[in-house]
Image (cartoon, rainbow, N blue to C red):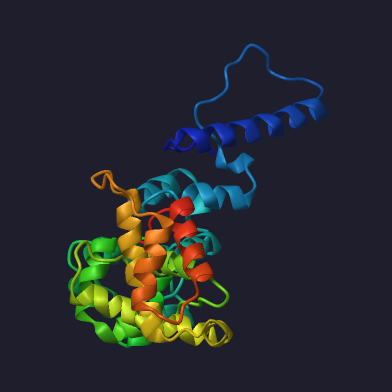
Length: 294
């Protein structure tokens, strides 16, 4: 079995080489001899690694590199369980996963189609979704499309923002997939913007996102809403306050940073029922952790 055809990032390559060196040391000890004076190999043979580690390495490759690798490792290239794992680890949800698959179905072919569709989406979102539907990978239903977006790592955030701005029905379903139960408000907002990136400028789309987040946050935390006297409108105001505070504290162009006392005073003017302690904790979170929409 040949050597691998690619290099991993330096830190991961070093870690894998250390694990392989330990493995070879143990193997050499059992055989009673070791090759001395030889430099370590620059590349690693997947056959000598645990299957889980091999899949992790392969997950860094695109479809073209995987096909090249499968030419060297014939058994690996024909392993349907491996290709299935690669598909589901990168595209966590597809409608086709829940269908009855034909006898000649190939996860390797599906991986190539998913990769092609993702590249198409990152150039033109509508054409990308159309490609997935034409191959039977997705069905045209807001819930299915939202799950695909939520569990996929290969879609560019700028193209996603364009697509979700056009498909508000998909955006609604995508918001409901988030679970903010028992999360502190700034942390929940960061999690939200990690999946649904905020626009660069304030506008109608940002207002829509914050409105949907506010309703979802209150739905997930009815006890907190009751104890603190929050409402979706109050959460909406707090979210805008957190975004403005994030810009103020993190922007190098703002010389005079907002103080904690100023933030509490400004926020209490807009949200009268919120306690000073709660608003102070919001300030501390942004000050220590950073921007909510970075």
